[in-house]
Every structure is written in C-alpha cells, then in structure tokens.
Amino acid sequence: MHVGTDVDEWEETLEARYPAPPGQFRTVNPEKVKEDFRDYRAEARPSVREFYRRNHQQQTLEFVRSKKAEYGALGRKQMGIWEAMEFLNTLVDDSDPDTDLSQIEHLLQTSEAIRRDGRPRWFILTGLVHDLGKILCLFGEPQWAVTGDTFPVGCRFSDRVVFAEFFADNPDTHVPDYQTPCGIYTEGCGLDQVHLSWGHDEYMYLVTRDYLPEEGLAMIRYHSCYPIHKEGAYSELLTDRDQELLGWVRDFNQYDLYSKSHSRPNVAELRPYYEDLIAEYFPPVVRW
Image (cartoon, rainbow, N blue to C red):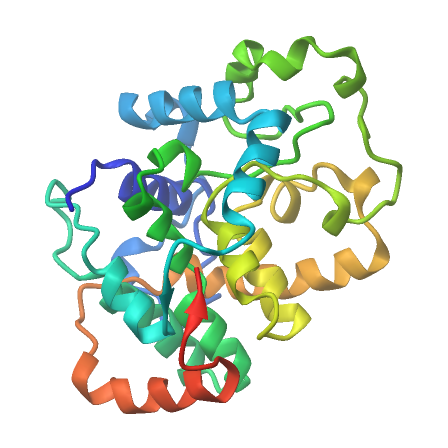
C-alpha cells in the first residue's frame, strides 16, 4: 500500500519545531540537529498546513468517541508484535526523497538508541512498538486521523496547539459547554479521564494497555500530545501523577524525534533479541 507524504512530513516538521539542543542527545544524526529555533509556521509546506486544517476541522468529541467505540473492542486482526511490524512495513511512502528505510528499520532505530543508553527493557520495547498504531492507515483511516499532534477535545482548544486558527472550522467551537478551560471535565480530573484527538497514540495504547508498565503506556498514549508535554497547555486538567508520567514522555521524546539516520539497522541480526524481548511482555498473539 502506498501512502501520501503526511506521515513523514509531520515527523520532519516536528524536528523543525522542537530542535535538539546541542549535545542533548548523543545518538542523534548530526545533520538533523537545529541549533536555533526556526519559525516553523512560516516555513511549513502547504501540504502540512492542509493536513492540520483537515485534522483541526474534523477532530471533534463526537468523532473521537466514535473511533474509540469502533476500535476499542480490538477485533480487526489478531497477530503478534513482530508480525504487526511486518504488516506496518507494507505502508510505503515512495514520494519521500530523503530516505528509503522501511518502517521496521525506523522502529529499530528508536529502540536501538534507547538500548545503547542502557535504559530498562520495558523502555526499549516501548520504543519498538510506540508507532505501530500507524497500522490504522492500513485499516483505511485518513492520515489526519492517524498522525499529527494530539490535543484534548470537549474543552476549549488551546492557542498553543499548532495552527490553532484552523479550529475555527471545528463544530465543537460552537458548543458552549466546550468553551471553558475544563469544558466537560473537572479541574484536576487527570489525563486518563480526558478524550484526546484520535490517532495512532490512543489506538496503540488500547492495544498495549494490559502488557506494559504505566510509564511505557504514558509514552505511547501521549508522545504526540505536544501541546501538553512541550507547550505546557491544559495544565488545569492534570494531576501530580500526570506530571510525573509526562516526565517519562519527555524523556522518551528525545529518542522518538532525534534518533533517525540513514544508517540501516541489521534487521535479521537484531530480530532474535527483540523477539525475546517481545515474548517477555506480550503473548504470541495480540488483538488489534
């Protein structure tokens, strides 16, 4: 299956918005380091703007609830984690001029960077699986409902969400009950009580929630929620425990953003290690 540029362009523009401070992450590809913050919005390609226009217009509370109901039963497929990686490998972007690495190789780059830093085994495994929710593209979901920054719905949209002006066309903007900082929620209710815009993060959280530690689940569920863990928005909804877990998300984020390079990991050589690691936490067959 071939896919448009949205998935890769979103990840590339994240690096422009949040450049790694010099020396922060030693396994980063030096060509990707941006020493000075750039005006991302001014430089964004038209396709990126269009992606966020569609995303912000259509990610409503009703849409999110419908997708949770549709996918929450996890009845689409049954397959093991490595099999899911191979399934995701059929998602190809042949329009990307910068790299011809497969999806599996991208997953291994992240997990291997974590492994080199001596992090816990569950942390390494989280790096391996965190983007597997992009399988949603192979289930026919549009890319604006798979990738992109995530944000709370059912409350007032923060102006710290990238391209926040596009929320003017979101129907929820005209629902009075959603126009306060907490909206349908209560202050300090906790992120686990908040509906975030639908995408690969929430879907993969649903798939893995019975298998990984709480910290790993937070990394998966919130790694695209840049308005919260990078911009400090929606703090009125958070608990002290959320703040602790977001520390893990930020720790993970350096590997997610800055570990990509053109150097190919040896998939055949690494596979036995990762199959053993997968078997430590997951059953042979997982519901998707």
